[in-house]
Image (tube, rainbow, N blue to C red; front, side, top):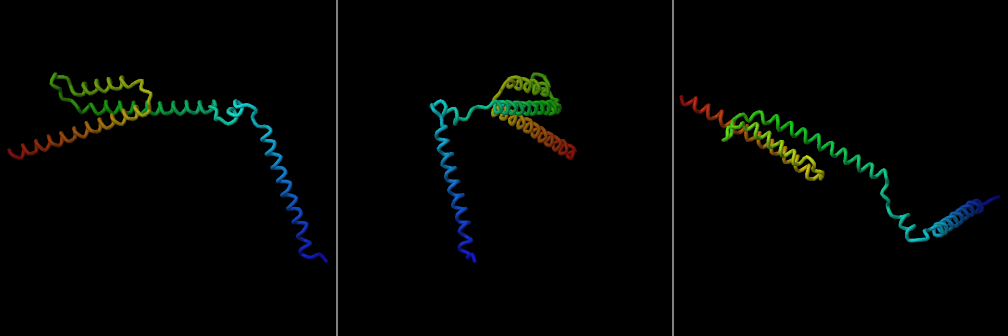
Length: 159
């Protein structure tokens, strides 16, 4: 009759054998890695320094192109919004030129000056500033028109 202790021994022996085999295998791999290591500093650097991969540069170029396309789209959208907004400025300035034409000319000049800007931060700042300027001009126009309507109502009520 086999006791529980005797049943466990072959299992223990198998585990110990497995552990020793893994340890020897690990030791052999470790020795192999050390042996197969770089012979020179150049090989060491070549193996461990991150190289600029061709795919990385292609990805960066694609990202830059997408950003430029997005910025171009935003700039065109802003320019169209400026042209649309200037339709409401139909009174002449002190020289007799319609404000609409003055605003359009200035917008065109500013867009031409910033045409070849490559820095994404600068482009973003210009786009945000342009959007704010258009919104501010329209807000002031609406406020002035409200004041004008109120003034006309007051004058008609006096009569």
